[in-house]
Length: 189
Length: 189
Figure (cartoon, each protein chain N blue to C red):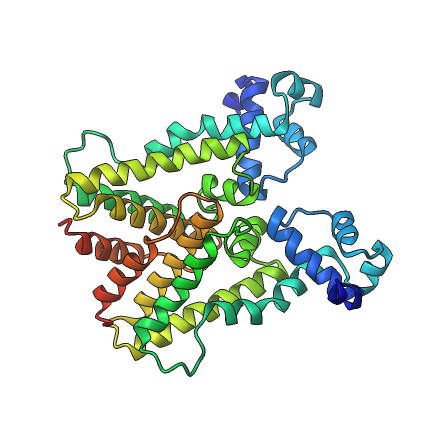
């Protein structure tokens, strides 16, 4: 509560945009956003030109936390195979939480259906970072075709978070064997 | 145009719901749906209790066409490996079309964020059918663990359509090696 009280209107709007779009989708209204943030519409429009700009800024602001949660530390000294599996362990461990609704970046992109939207550009950047991480580890791990493996891991990630987000099934014990099969196939031991 | 003219208001509403939600998302308004269908709101509400009911009916109505497009004919006599690859060839060939926005069932489920929604139940059924197809072929093909392989193929499918739908990349040449790696790993030759 103390943090909430000290947060600026801008911070509260970014927080409201992040949580409401995650829970309800990008269609959430400006009224609901302002109400959740405790900010008047007038103040909101002074800070952000539009709801789209607010949404874009809230996605942008979460990139660092998202990346830190998902990727291993740059210098953890573990072999590439373990570092790649680390990402999927993070997904598996979060997927069980009742509030988990999949990857916010993938969901926003699917909901917007518009690659030209400024928020889509943020999403592409975040997703590009993940693929670049897989690509670098694949190469370091001696994969026969690092580009192909990076792509396979990226879409295994998407499939896993999509299914976990819509509660298709419990992911426990299903992701690791899939990723391992792809790593084995590419010769990353 | 003749077909359009002969279609009943119910058919036109189902068609409008299917195309507008595919292009714009489940947030599309009743006004837009009625306008696209050329049906008054009053008529719509005589035919469907709510927009949710219309959406659910439109998803239900497309199941047969969706399944026929994706799955091979039951009696095509091809080996399980080929029958499984057939599904992914369909995805790959459709993914290039400009109007392709991924799998409508996956998208609706991600957008609704509500497993209790009647449309979510239709989605679960369709997706369950696909997994059941993979499961049956995996077993017929002698997979070491048919349940695991069915799940791996299902989420490869989700990852592929999600990425194709948001134009992350051109899928050409990327799906088949991934599916082949999983089939090899499970011993389905």
